[in-house]
Amino acid sequence: MSFKMNNHSLRVDSESPRNSLEIGMSSSAISSGNGKTVEDKNQEEREMEKKFTGFAVPLYLQRYIAVKEILIKHNITKCIDFGSSECRVIDQYSQMEKLSRLAFVDIDRTALISNLHRLTPRLMHSTRPIQLTVEVYEGDVTKYDHRMKAFEAATLIEVIEHLIPEDLEMCCNMVFGQLHPKLVVLTTPNSEFNVVFDMAEGKLRHWDHKFEWTREEFQSWCNNIAEMYGYNVEYSGVGETDKIPNLGYCSQIATFNRLQDISYDPIKKEDTYKFITKIQYPYMSDERKKSYLLDSVNFYLNKYAYDWFKSNEEAEEEEEEEEEKEEESKREKSSIVNVPLTDLMLYSGIWENCSDINSLRKSLICAGYNLTSDGHSVLVERKTNKQFDEESDDDNLLFDENEFGGSQFSDAEDDCSQNVLTKDYTVPCFEEHWN
Image (cartoon, rainbow, N blue to C red; front, side, top):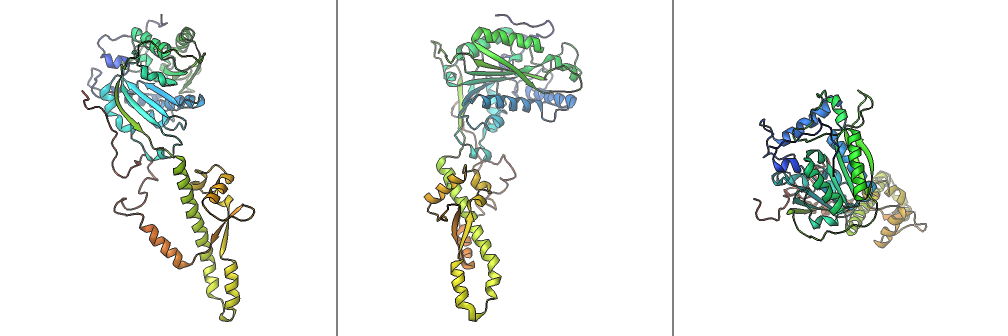
């Protein structure tokens, strides 16, 4: 298999460490030769992209979002991300509601372990409709592991340009030939765009890049891969500029769709990757959603009853004694508050856990609430001030301010990175020996 590369786009550094030229790009333990770590270099590359092109959204984030949208479009439920030592893509992939299983694979063990903190489940994940299981492996993208066969899609974001030709060929054979997933998405720099960065001809964006392709070179290579392994391919990209016309995207994207719904499992079933850890994310189960819905309904119905009570309290105090019996009869007739279901559906705590009014109506009936004859409103009994005071005291017993740091939610509403648990959460590692 041959790869079309011009003379100035392919550079092979024989002294580059094996882990950096295969997948790892961010280990603090790897130096570029001038005292700077790979992670420092990645940050420099991001700063360069931001400074010279003025991207409103950082280019690396645009890549993550674009790949996520492609996976969503194809209804992917299980995905492997190769070259994921920084684990940053979790913020985007965890937003995929249908994603149930995600594997991170990188050859740089040190980088993976140092970035495991990014995989900590957060408050925002608790609203997922299904559980997401994240697995982390130390592994070589050129080596096959039969456990990866269960995944529908593979993503390689800014990976292939870090591979020397021999490794790139083995990577393609493993991903497209042996794994042969339903979908493969990969991104790589567009060398034509480098002029925007005021880079000299032939200079590469990252010290560990072995090559950078033009649009024609990239699409020629992808077309050969698609024909060889039975895929069709579509092209897109992220990062545009109006400074110089007709440069294309800063980062190129190729999406490979398998032509036949057939995948053959290689004879060898070896566990070549080293398992590091597994994290199970929280999710909103049906029972949990039902409980949240009824709690929200109860809260807002009580609010309606209390508002009704407060609005009528002053008028009741001015009633004359001789009309007491007549007014008492009126109060008995008006002691029920009708709350329209359409009003309840305006509250996020209700519509987020209930698809429509019909579902809300069924849930209220099953929970024992009384509805009007037409089913459009729920009936709530008016309560006295004393009853509200007693219920407030009972509610206060549910929350110990000392235990929860001063309030029920503290800063969780303002900080989406707030942990789900009230105490510090540490991503577990199931291996006893890390060396």
